[in-house]
Image (cartoon, rainbow, N blue to C red; front, side, top):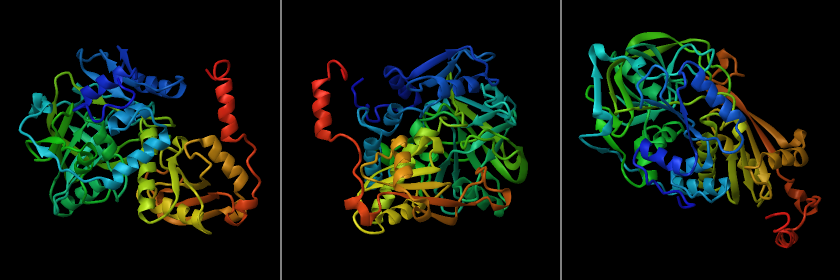
Amino acid sequence: MNKEAAVFSYTDLREWLKLVDSIGELKRIVSADCNLEMGTVAELIYRERPGVIPALLFDKIQGYPDGWRVLFGQQLSMRRLALILGLPFDAGPLTQVDLFRRKLSTLQPIPPRIVDHGAVLENRISGNDIDLLKFPVPLIHEQDGGRFIGTASIAITQDRDDGWVNLGTYRSMVHDSKRLGLFTSSVSKHGRIHMEKYFRAGEPCPVVVCVGQDPLLVIGGGHPIEAGYSEYDYCGGLKGKPIDVVRGELTGLPIPASAEIAIEGFMHPGDVQAEGPFGEWMGYYGDETVDTPVMRVERIYHRDDPILCCARPGRPPSDESLAKCFVRAAQIWNRVEKTGLPSVKGVWSIESGCGSLFNVISIKQAYPGHSRQALVLAAQVLGGAYNGRFVVAVDDDIDPTNTFDVLWAMATRCDPESSIEIIRRCWGGALDVVIPAEEKGHSSRALIDACKPYHRRSDFPPVAESSEKLKNTIREKWKEDIFG
């Protein structure tokens, strides 16, 4: 393949996997057990394998038909993210973030296109034939409360009053052959808002859970966008063409036409059951067990030889951590510039901060207070406002993607007494493990000014490093013997 990504040249998950295979980033694993083995293999590869972490395609799974497969690790490399988002391969992470945020700043939503037929309709299951565990649903972590079919999934709901469609990445635990628990962790989640509108009216809430689809839809559903704005329109805008969907036979909800597996049903008012725990994105088990709305499954659609897409959340690196870093950074950069903040040189979310808890913004200081303004904005715009913890401002000589350099700037340019501010009662989440149960929904932010003091910039000690001119001269002279 050319060094640049084939920009949105794939039409479905299977074509995307062929592209991933062609760049050497797909690892096939044969004859694994879905009982803890897949999840542990993924954990070991994510944490212990040197170099690029491949996508993991489990095949010939013990106890299931040949050809039925399970995929982990879709988003865990910059080149796979480039394939998903239509970005060049040969650019560095910060350049790719910049290119993506430019896409976001000019994005024109494109609504989905309703079609009559789609590969997802190759098989229809209803009535007594419904059995969620006919699929190789993994038990991922040892202390999980059950098998979770929805981990790299999208849950499709529609606003009862206004009609807009939401795609949300909410975990789904299998209670039995015909029932799922759908965990919408926060009252601010759009799927939760949709569900409660139906419940207040005394009506069941229609829902479709897809567990294998274009990976762009998972990224769209997994990151915050404004209420009333469908992720289908957002992803269509990114692709530059509409997403093809078919209507669910019972709910009428739009289902990706090329999805691998789609599960259709209803959640009924008052119908709840204890769900969890589950190893979550912060690297800890979430709430022990919570009463969660039950989805009663009435249809299953799937392709021939379906691919069940999974994620293994946990201590980073995990399935979502890199994509969260990338997309949140682009969202923050896009939004702070739209407020009028000048001279932003880069934004990054550090992966060990789980993709949202540790954000860095680099600026070329232009006036007194510029760095503090950058900190406050980065902490509160879309992408940074939800479930944040630390925001660091650095000068433009610091690459925000380089954790070593960021920590160096914090250690040498930051006097804690005068350089750190705390803002309280910010937007937090239900899975934040350090916040007591009675206070969940709020959390604080530490704003760390690791820029050189503005009034001392001209006399601040120079950095002890060679000039770029000298370094380039030495690189050229010794490129054969040392740098070749």
